[in-house]
Image 1 (cartoon, rainbow, N blue to C red):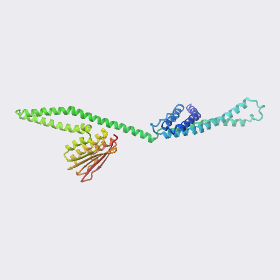
Image 2 (tube, one colour; image 1 turned 30 degrees about the horizontal axis):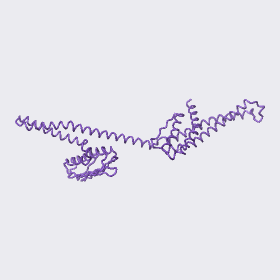
Image 3 (cartoon, one colour; image 1 turned 60 degrees about the vertical axis):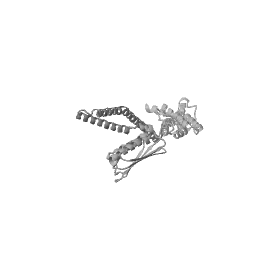
Image 4 (cartoon, one colour; image 1 turned 180 degrees about the vertical axis):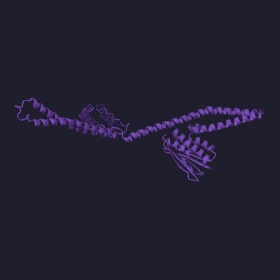
Length: 377
């Protein structure tokens, strides 16, 4: 039953194809050259609705602006293809119908009145009946084959290609990743504000109170005085560590004054002399600035811990849509991301915004880290 229904639907699709095909051809011929991005999807929509209504097959349209040429080409190709398909099917059915009429006429009209037709010849009538039946079946078979051919072309030309599908998927993933990176950066800024306005202020107050008590309670028990002094020193140490943590998350000066001011602060606090050059006339996005700041801060920390260097050079320049960050030191070299150092984290952070990181660190030095970050804004 399903096969018979499918055969009828294919036949209706083929027979009704010429009006829609010719109409689409005419629309494209008249206006396709002027408004291809409108006419192509418009005509293709006719065919998609036709396949959905008659065959129950829904074709996925390409993304806006994609596949316009293929849709226009299909609209032009559908006209001659539909004419050929319909003509073949109609010819088969017409000949079969003539044979059926001939047989019916012979059964109804008396033999004596039509001497030029030998209806008494059973061989002739059998051949005509068989041919009429075969042509009827052949019409349905041809309709099914032409419908498959048209549907194959439609799936190839009216749906997004594999490259377009992958492109849309890549764009969606890139947008999603950018949203995740922006959300993470916003969360770091929120944590920085909360620590700066909350815990850091309480530690400052605690350290001041302990310092005041330490200065005024000089005649107390020596053990209590020592405990008070230790508590004061621990409070100051905790405050110092908290400030370093806050600066590592997302310093407020980075949002307010940009990379130059933010990096000048960490360069001044570095135990190794840092020569800093920042040439960024147009500020990049907050996310790119945060990544550049993190790269420099982490690199300076790694150099201070592992390199045994006596000087560090940091150069940041923006050229067009690229922000270049170069950190060089005169240490012992031999840095390798595979050793589990902070270099692996740097590479991951840079890669999260489609940046590139190159490392040159031969044994004996020097070590040079080159980072390129995209700047859309």
